[in-house]
Image (cartoon, rainbow, N blue to C red; front, side, top):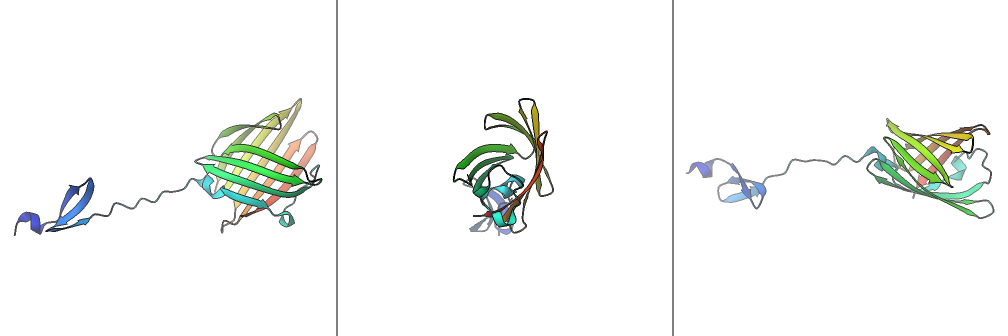
Length: 173
């Protein structure tokens, strides 16, 4: 018996490592490398506002329905929100956040600067918008339930016109 037949050798066959032991060659298993999704990926999906479990605060016009579509792209979250308000008019907004840094959006003609960071499983977003001489500050905390079916946004807004709190609860669709 030759040394080659007796000892398994690592040889390359068509660019893949193969264990060779005699005439039968068995492909070697590549090391298992599980891709770890970015923490932002857990927020991605189509989310329907659950009005019964939400506290809308004191909005100027009551929201009748709302759906948010969130797309994760690495550390970026792209959000498309469509709300139907009392009177049957709709409000469509598109914006994006960075879960580990700064983002700039223009909403309703106003620049909004947002700084995001993750702490545990919670996404913290702190936004600032200047409207003439007024500054509006908004702090949001986003959480996805352990089963991945519920997204909760807790929002606190501060401005010279007053402070407001909201709790928006969404169900994954």
